[in-house]
Image (cartoon, rainbow, N blue to C red; front, side, top):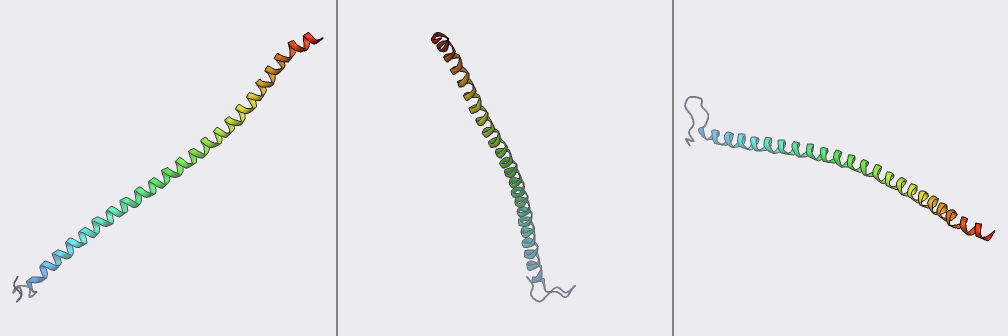
Length: 95
């Protein structure tokens, strides 16, 4: 590099290297910013999907609890019906 300067524009020629380095650094910063924006968008999408999944899990849990309660009632109903069917012939023979 010619430290005495460029005769045409009067600027030292060694300023071209720092400007180029600054441009490269700015390009790297811009790239990192773009990557970070993409990452933030992905995190927000993932959060939304997890929230939807959590909502569906809650609905499934509620449905499972309702099914369990209904199954218990049905089991007791048929148990009573079977007991009546089993006791009826016994009662008929006692009379």
